[in-house]
Length: 158
Image 1 (cartoon, one colour):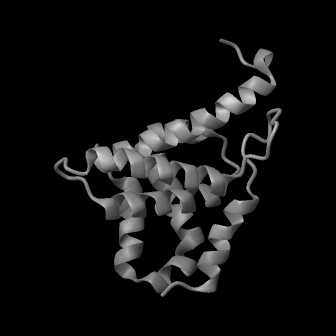
Image 2: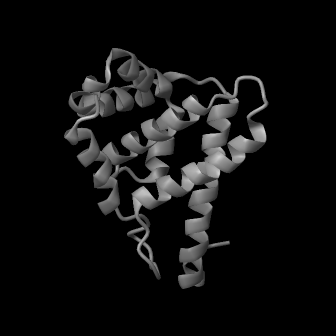
């Protein structure tokens, strides 16, 4: 059962500004970025849906899981996050903490959902579903970067 606390947590992403350490000609919000990512994932998925292992539910859940993770670790800058992700044990501990922060709002969705959430970040398998989400993440981030780079072209080393 979806409860108000979960909806409010997702709504937090509507107030999370992205690239707030850069000159931006427009507001770039986390919820917008995640929605853009999922639209891109849909189009990529349409090209891949006949591939073995492809699963729309895995893509949708993965998008939700990644959004919730991002809401919790909002203050963790990407270079630090990726450094942590390189170390399996540190990444596992980070995601255990993320789950602890979300357990109250996720538990009404059932044990199976909570287990899928926890295992999603522990799996290192390279599935077509994860590749689609990863590519969608990259394209949505690149789109934002292109906007801010135009605002301050000298602010980025080539």
